[in-house]
Amino acid sequence: MNIRDLYSLVEENDNIKEDYYPRYNVKRGLRNADGSGVLVGLTNISAVFGFHKIDEDTVPIEGELYYRGISIKDIVKGFQADGRMGFDEAAFLVLFGKLPTKDELDLYRDTLTEHRALHPGFNENIILKYNCENIMNILGRSVLALYSFDHNPDDTSLPNLMDQSINLIAKFPTIVAYSYHALRYKFHNDSLVVHPPREDLTTVENFLYMLRKSGDFTKLEAETLDLALTLHIDHGGGNNSTFTTHVVSSSGTDTYSTIAAALGSLKGPLHGGANRSVTDMMDNFKHNVEHWDDEGEVFDYMKKLLTRQAFDKSGKIYGLGHAVYTKSDPRAVILKEKAEELAKDKGRYEEFKLYDNIERLMPDVFEDVKGKRMHISPNVDFYSGFVYDCLDIPRDVYTPLFAVSRIVGWCAHRIEEIRNGKKIIRPAYKNVAEFKQYVPIAERF
Image (tube, rainbow, N blue to C red; front, side, top):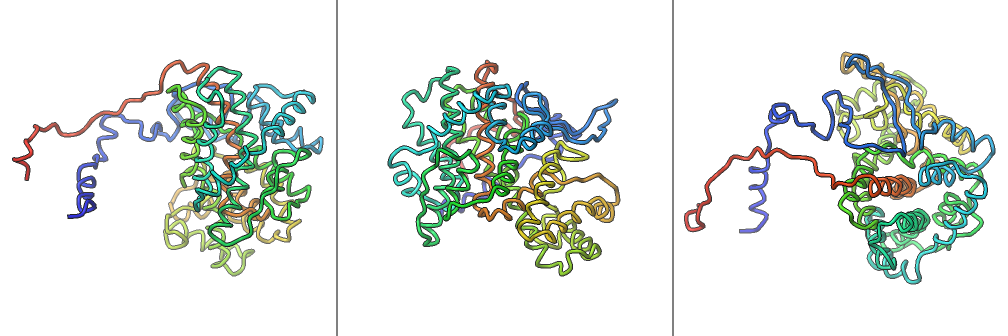
């Protein structure tokens, strides 16, 4: 007998009847019956609005996202009007709770610059030596390794938490860029590229410089990636990886263990891998639809996707629809405008128009297949994957790039939980197993 012969026992004994969930009023996935999240905490950091509740009815509205009470639309409009990069400014806002003065922003950026470089030997002994084909795993292991380089890793006082947060925010782009080159070196026989971070570049500029072999990038490329990362910094306390941050932080554990757990959550394809799913789907779409400007051809192939006849046969059109947003995802609206500009610059405007056609046709296709009309708008992943592809960012880097941005939100939420949570997060699970008598081993058959 092989141990795997016994694995079927788990299949037999781990099934829970579907009708048990409504019977015991279980909020499956911490979701209410209408799909909204169960209220489990309070936060000052960011707010997401996608609908209004009127007499128990859900009324769709144009989506809104706020960082520390300030609309993301206004934040973006502010730094774009000045012709500035916005990621570091928005990160300061989320982390410190206020918009920085020029001097405060300069001090923050200078501090990031001091912490961007990895410790001597870190790349060789942590990233290169124990490399694998998934950068998220390399990133998680690197975060845990940073615990060993911290002289006070378990201290949860506010100054120490802030020191650890800034250190992680600074180092994430470096670790991701180096991990990508290590992966290419080990598994694809590429030359090993190691660009030390530069003091004269912002967080996003440094990432592009370290990621690309040439180290070159244009102003438009940097602006577009800066915008994309700004839009991904935080998205309320209930998204899976941020809630993971709250749960793990509530136990009183260290920052590095907490962030490693959040990375494990983000790696899941139902969370951080969505933009790659969009890009892979669109490759399939472009291969099977000959005339991208023919609405009939596009409509027909979208029907095939929804009816499980095409691509991965999941019945999904990735990047369309959102758990909270109804009429629009403000991040997608903002990023789409920049994506159009980038597409024209890169000679990929016809492809951009294909994305636009899919977005516009989705409600009609859904009604044709499902028999009811719904307003289904693109989420940020629909255009972020296209943007990353236009920027020649490798797909192995898509989800780690999400982490480069979301580490800011995770750190802010961890600090908020440590300071305000007070209790370990412990929801209840009802046991529905059949109770049995213990049988002596000689009598078991």
